[in-house]
Image (tube, rainbow, N blue to C red; front, top):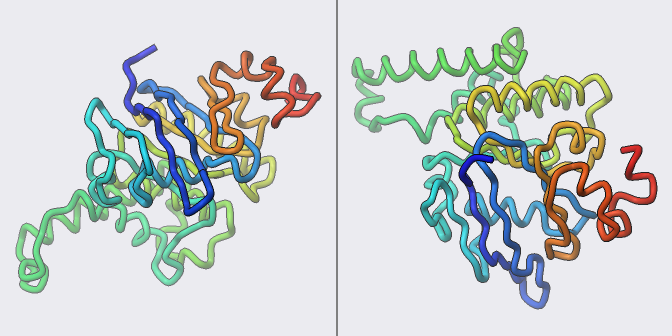
Length: 258
């Protein structure tokens, strides 16, 4: 297995009297799909929020590519190479699909208000580059024919795919996908699985939060299981399926059929 791209060390988060995460430790090797599973309220999305800088941890450290990123702002973390999607779809509804993806390039674009106002050659070059990349990503995720449509007019599955394209536009080394299969039908879930594998082929590591156990077990290289904010298991899909504590806490007695 390759060197870790992400390391979580002793990570805890307290909201008043509620301990949402308690001393969580794990690492994510580069070039894999690593999944976080657990019941609702286990702390999965809280963990994503700590990794991406939305919340500061109460204790512990997050390191990306060997550098501590704890306490950095979300835009700084995005610029370092971590992007994410959200459990509830967050697209700019009145903007076109193409414009939504172009927004993802903001953290990679250089420019000034004066330069934009004067339409300097460097600004025009940047706009052409950003537009070209956005179209390439729409093609990559299968939404090229939706480029000019308002994001709000797209069905849920395509909005989720658009959000993934926008996250890829930040040019990440690690993408955190928060329940991307939520609300999708069987065919859309199969397409999502193919897209995740294609993302890996682009050299982007995937950290996945997902409730669809069939998807998790089929696509993950490694799995971390959370319960009540604590890590109770970690291993390959086959190891997780056979872990008695996991079966009792989450997967259920029919886990072998998942």
